[in-house]
Length: 258
Length: 258
Image 1 (cartoon, rainbow over the protein chains, first blue to last red):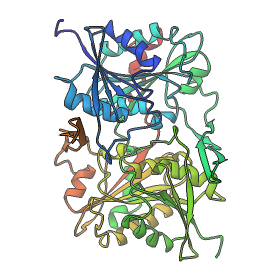
Image 2 (image 1 turned 30 degrees about the vertical axis):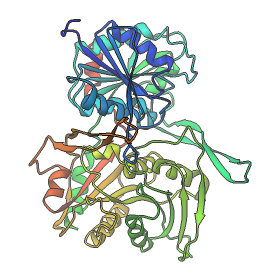
Image 3 (image 1 turned 60 degrees about the vertical axis):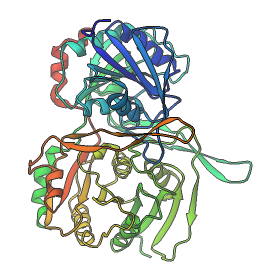
Image 4 (image 1 turned 90 degrees about the vertical axis):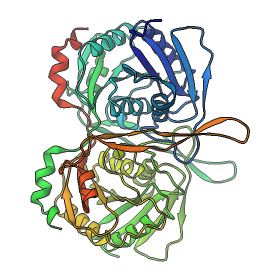
């Protein structure tokens, strides 16, 4: 196996046995040597959470392909990336791919997403990083229409490096795909988020649920519009979340005179 | 009790019994009516993680102050904010305060922080939101020097509302405080992050640890510089993480022609 092949780190938040990561491994094999370090079970909506109150376990799994190494990890997607970079890989990977997520990571979901948490962790460590998601939560989601597009997007991404600190959040709609749109993150929030129930012991408990409120409905520059209209959304995202536009205002308001 | 008093929602990631949240409740009482919905134990480094695989429990705790209501929650800091907005509070709060965190949330820590996860959740829901942290992990950390500064910062924040989607990440150094600096997030990352051990059963496991690498050492506009030099850092942060500067480049590179 040539060392000149790109080294690709793959992770996700649905766990190493999910269909989406299997599809992504197959895709990535065409592009380079693949090392997978992924959670041993579902870790959806884990954002950039780290495991700090408990130890982390990791195991190498058998692989029937010499181009693919597989490791499962007891931690979050971000833990997986940290473990890969510090304990598994011999050198910094050339690319990090996270997904393919079963479910949308568009709009504000980007900040809750474990898939994108792993992408940000790659980006923090100066690795070109892309998150790939399909807007279908089903365990048996059909990824076939998305795969040629995702492969082309990843090839384009490798061809044209982004500035340090910038990564890609790519989401695909279910069904026929019309093409690709470069978008911004849609403004919006989730509402009516809890289903209240009573346990057999008489205790109240809640399940997180709810509906997304799109505050920019119909705006063709947003990722939600692209997805609703049959396009894959490509949103460049960053890890420096300073709001530079208000720095001078804060100084004018006298914060530094406190 | 007058309804004209501001309604202040308080949460944190160190748990409802921590010293930091007790200090923050005392501070906030001077400014309005306080409702606390905070984790029932430590939830550090939970970022914007949500509890989706398990139900969430919540209990009202006794309060010896008619101006303060206390609720503990089995979820993450972000869950606490969602639960407060949807199930606990009768109206949208006028202010969300998260902390006072025992430990720094400056630089890239902002994206791992549960304290700041709660702040982003408030911001997503259009509530003026501030995260307050002290760079001291000790359970018995001394907050006394910071409190007059934090109170003045929160009063300033209420006086001069920020644009929607922007919130504040405020960190204080331990020891004597020289003043307040309006800053940007320092570029940097964590390295050598795992302590490898062997369990009594002979299994390998890891504890997350490591050192922060400051890529902008000595840059006086960064939050790490402010903290290292005795100043409180005030960093405006945003929830729209689109990197607008590269949208046109991505179009030029032909993503939309895929």
